[in-house]
Image (cartoon, rainbow, N blue to C red; front, side, top):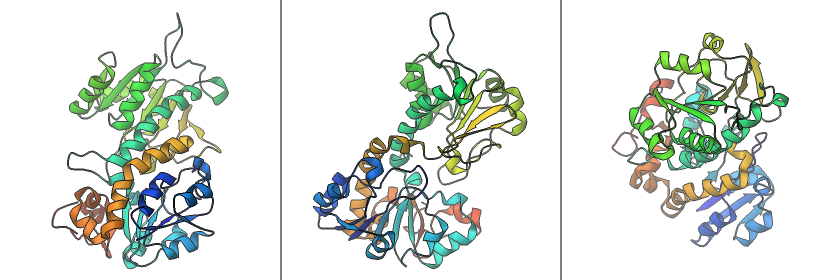
Length: 372
């Protein structure tokens, strides 16, 4: 199969869909891989690295798209790309189509593009391997970035996340006890921060305590508990996710009045809409803004700041699915691999995620005899 790797043009996005090692795994199996020139530079991989792995370097995004049956991207494609995808092409990316306008979704259906979202690939146990890999990195990075946001020069109130002898640590409240929340809790607790985790699931909170320890308090995410946590938090880290759906709003603008001035909200669920009413996407050219005295940080592609590590983690997670599609074709792969089936938004001109079809008011079709 012909596979294309595109250079991501989103500002501050430095990752690429596969490392040279991942490309070599495909070329060793007899597949052709076309890499857009300089696509890997942000992650530290040169065109020569990809040539040595057996790839062909092409010098425009258009050429990579025209030559490839299977396309790998990182960030959600811009609207201009929707009409450039070839009919019947398979495109793997972080699509987040629950937030896509209806007209763009209709274009994907009309052109019969098969869209696979990294964020919704899920196994029988509910584990999302690609999302988990990125979330682990994002959770660790969130503590590093959050530590800076507490400092005066970044608009914070001059706190040290870890505290110091005789000085109490900052209080980090994490909304969501999934992979990102657990990774952030473990990292923050490791440097001495005061960490509290809220989630609606007792089982999820139990997993946090099993991993991090019982010195991390946990709370059920009721409205009253959330309001209590807002009152003492120095940083609120939003790590809420609902696979393939928009993140619910948990923190309203009126609730910001419960927080201490110059406290920080880090809404890392912003790529799925955000769970704060006052959240809007930012990037590292202007990563923060202030609403009612509260600093907001809403950068959606945080793992890109550790682009080499993130690209390696992404390759480890996605390569088995790419190999299966390339070896057997998408029709057979989606029929045989239930995880890949769950990770597919559109296929052969139809929406194959029931909840998304209902949300957008389009017909739903089951591609495999079972609900994705």
